[in-house]
Length: 553
Image (cartoon, rainbow, N blue to C red; front, side, top):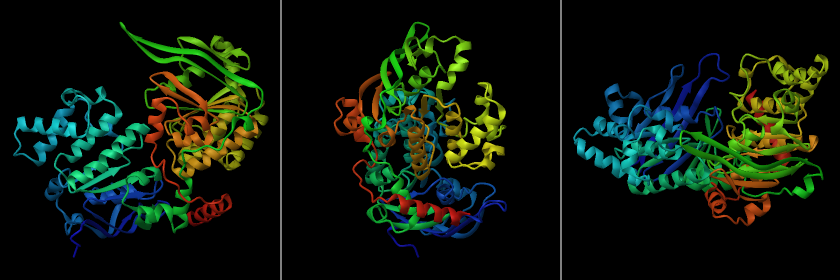
């Protein structure tokens, strides 16, 4: 019999994968309990089974997967035995879901207010049309949305990503559910918006006294929001406990590795130690103005900085601050309105198309999406050697160089003949790095190049980029919305707001003594910034990694 304080239990849940999968179970013998007023964080890397397990709570297991055993008890009743009528009554009413991508959860052709009202029409038909509107606007106010009446009449594309996420939360809370499931709801959000959403979920827990299951791979988020933590690895819950127990005294090797991978808001880099007296890039008064009819948008305003060989500039700021515009104008993926980019004493922006072909080798880009940036129809060998061959490198030397680079990024010669689909996300990003380095560039622009990776993979890629930078002495412009990541790899920091660099300095000075109010706001919003997790020494971390890889194979 379910204990009175446990509103939801998962008991001995096993969900099978298709026959040709790399393991038998998506979820294996999972057991969790969650109570009212409690936030349970379910953590683990991609493919660990987090989302599959929580899908069973709504009896919404994906096609191709099979329920093998177990039960999901909600107020003592097994949801897995509910018929369609009972499930329809349950979903969105007693148990609600907040999805990772808010724009995908909203219909782009229907006004926002009407979409929220649909929840009332479906689950609370006794509420009149007039009252539905009042309740919806009341929810928007509770979500701290600006101008609730305007948002009620708006379409999804007319509000920001953070506002969309608040709207999705409002929809989930419309019927005051007993259980709220949040599946990576802050992954794609700016650090300040992320902090607002986390504070909101914590506040709502107190208001509604609901149980919250929060799925995430970010231990910084866990530190800010969790009451209890369940760690998943390859379909199994390997460790459970209070936040303090799991974060400060992890018992399982895998948990120790995840905790160790969490980047902190501190830097140990000193530009005087890594750079040499050889300026390789100088950006001067760079501007980008977009004009739509009578309106103008200043996407980039008088950007100025310079870098020596071996130095890294971290560019941070919220979405829309101008970070990616800066990156794309520097590399000429978009043409700036004015200004100059000097690379090796040559104005990169003044080059003709013919001159640009040969000059491209001097500045390369590592893209954000390791899946979208690689051609799925081409082999790895073809992609890495393509640039070399276009620059006139003999074929045998190009292939020899490609093999060398793949070895440097931790991939063997056998990778040359394989296509991107056969690699993991972290491996694909390593291929992207190898491709960028194939031209031996003097400057590398990395645009959110680790944001799509799990924490342990992210740590590996950051270490790799640091090692390769030291080896080749290239300057790097590292674009990120995550200040903790910027702190790990940057010598200097440029903080961007509304297209302008509002603060610039060494990473140490920015993080230890920020001057601009916007910078202070970003730092204060960083998840888990006051948390001091236990750290593994490098040898122990490497040992655990090898042991886990052996078990996985």
